[in-house]
Image (cartoon, rainbow, N blue to C red; front, side, top):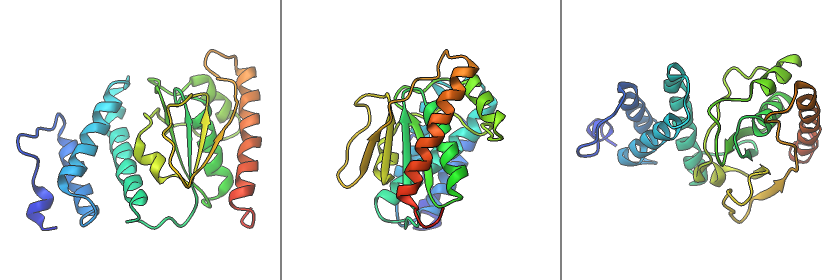
Length: 219
């Protein structure tokens, strides 16, 4: 794709924030030959709009949008086979993406040592990560600073090898060739720290068993 193509925008397209224009330009260059500028622009604006609905701290909106849009475009490229997947891809989905799925994602990252790539999402994402969940994770030295609720999108499901659902019903689309599991876990919303610790420890056990099936020789 030429520089002119990388810089062009959809006719009449306006960006509510300047950083979105820069993000679209950078991703168009990064994924040149895989996606058109129009596709990238649509993903950037959709990602911004989705997070704007639930964002409570506007200072974090830019950083989160950049991460969310980049991850979505990357996932779509993986699903199309344009990017090789060197490790298994796991997606955790719960309703609010504020507790269970976030804990599972953090544990998977920490315990796999990079042998698994993980994403998380929510069928009806909350405005913020559950503070009691963050406190329970901090007790064992796991940081939730960069965690934020994200809406479930089709691209991350397509990119996953394993999809773990946690009380989100039938919201997750089903694609052939993927492994689906449903973990019956108590929702930590409104629970005391003591009860959240129990949920946290159950998630740890489940993640360890999952990793044993995905990376039996690496752990």
